[in-house]
Image 1: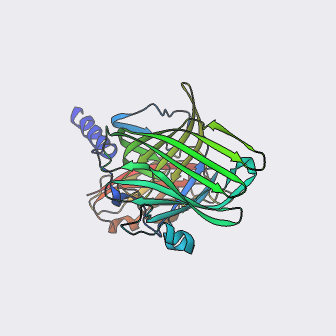
Image 2: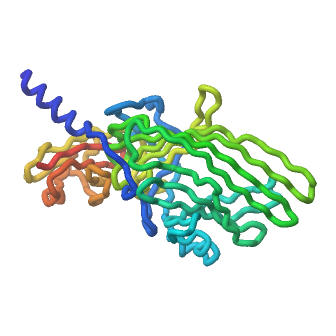
Image 3: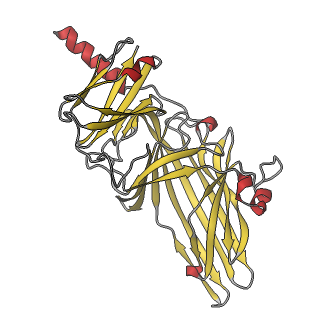
Length: 366
């Protein structure tokens, strides 16, 4: 009996324990890549952002989305001729960029200077991933705005224990209307590595915590005066995995003394119809998969409280890549998964979603 218990413990540990990883330039999105995200502003009650260190376990499997969006990485040349020239990816260009992303509109000068159609520009190199500036329609004119000092979002190689910082700044001058300036100080700390669990699956990750402070200044010509104000102190908690393209999970908070207030949560996910169809509630289904490990035999799943209902099963590789999505009908709670027999050996996560709730299972094929 003691040997059996030891074997079960070892198998369980092998599913959830990973080795430390390193993140580099090739692990981020290239132009044309798209990633589906689920979005919410709350985190499960049993989680703590204070969890860090070596071989940590972050269980955010209880996240429930309010909405979904698609993160799209754009080619610089697709954002307009003015920006394509100014941010051209050329060695001699101090503002060179190789990635662009749609940004949020700004209210410059308290709305006196409308700043719309914003694009952010980044350069991903072997040494770092940095924002070099942005472009925006300012009073009807497409205006490139370079950062005098670039914002180093990640330094490579990105390893557990790394700490780095940078200062970035920009200025916008609109003739006859005024100008705006902004400064930011960023401190990045890779404060943990280990296992992250989300509704999408289980990932081998490192966590980067970015603390951001800064200030903005505005002068409005028509009023003849200007003013400066500090930015709200914020932290970005970002979990990165190899070939992840973007953070698997990012939680942004506002900081007031020792208190943190969650402002946004975005995590990689599959498409979920949040209005109709299969339920996406947080109730846990009672589920198991067998044989586990499997050596190529037929694989079955039992869902004790599903009975004869329909469920969706999303199968992911160990690095979070979606392999297939299956729509199955349970026969007295039992489902035959013939599709899994042809998969290559390795660890897989199966996310199950049915009318009565959901479950996440880890499965090993030898």
